[in-house]
Length: 264
Image (cartoon, rainbow, N blue to C red; front, side, top):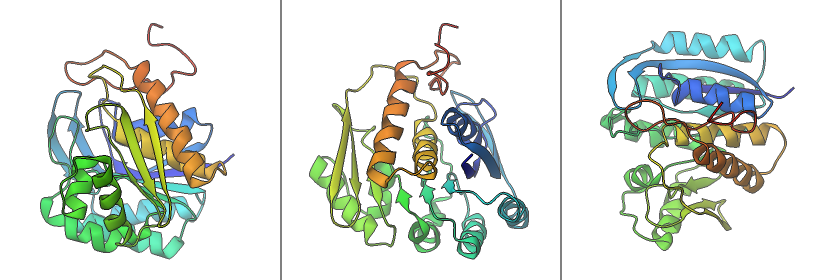
């Protein structure tokens, strides 16, 4: 069985963060492991508080995993502070896993900040160069690339700028745009477009976490990057199609839509 590690913040309501990652990985038939970097008190409607785990305990968790069950792929999500980023980067450089999918989480679905704004420089310097695939949404890509994104051409330009910062592949996600859900993947030479019809629902809590975990799972299973992204996008699209209307805000995806329906 392939093994995949998520390094991210938690979501006590189960729709995003480490909890969404573990569900996604399990649905893909890989063995899921986790390193928690922040405990987040959140639900479908709001983020109440965040308690960061110390850099030492982050590193200890990573040592515990890598020295015993070396992962075939790693997904990195919420990293809220420079100290947290530096701890994760040190251990990723030490162990050098083959595949690292990084979701540069800056905001929760409800707009609450999950990354210290002062940490973006550290993210670009320490974390981005470690990415096999970086998966920013449009607001995150705008922040990292330092430009506004209004068109597909803008998405491609932002992907080029972010690629130049050192990551191997950049996937600019178009979920925040209008029209069909179009994601743009750039590998330094070629652009790949992944487009699906937009599903009319507010229940999209955890889509970014889920997509990056699905990409990591598919890379671990042996698919190349474009195919891993295609399969992950299909998985997320079906998760949204069968999303769960629970909670008072943006409900979660159905991570196990292939196993049971939202009505069950």
